[in-house]
Length: 154
Image (cartoon, rainbow, N blue to C red):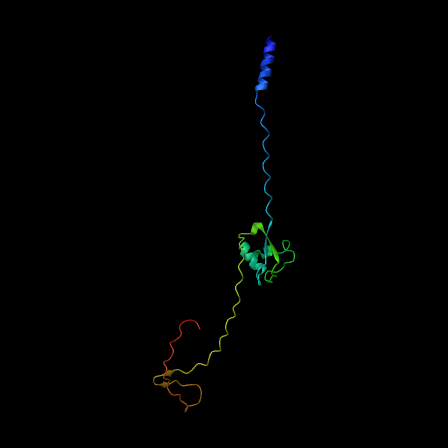
């Protein structure tokens, strides 16, 4: 009888036990790794590899890293790139991703005229002696005041 009571207690304990919890959901798959390169598409006439490197990596000298093997056909820093050309930049070098501004327009400087020959100084007493041998050709005193002296480098 003891056996019968133990057997009933055992069956009762097994029947009243909680069901095993379902296995936990597997963790979500990690996001795919980012593309190892940031790709810049040349938008402005006059963009060079050096300028692109300066804008996106912070150092002009990184243009050398952007050449082989990253961009197989680029070899020089200062050659203007065609509009639409894609340049790969390694992600570990990129410090900014905002669009590169257009290069400043080249402004031609106006040519300066050749300096005029120095005029002999005129004093209240009369004109200064000149190196020329025209003793009788004295100019009349000017009615305009002399310009102020120039201060600073010539």
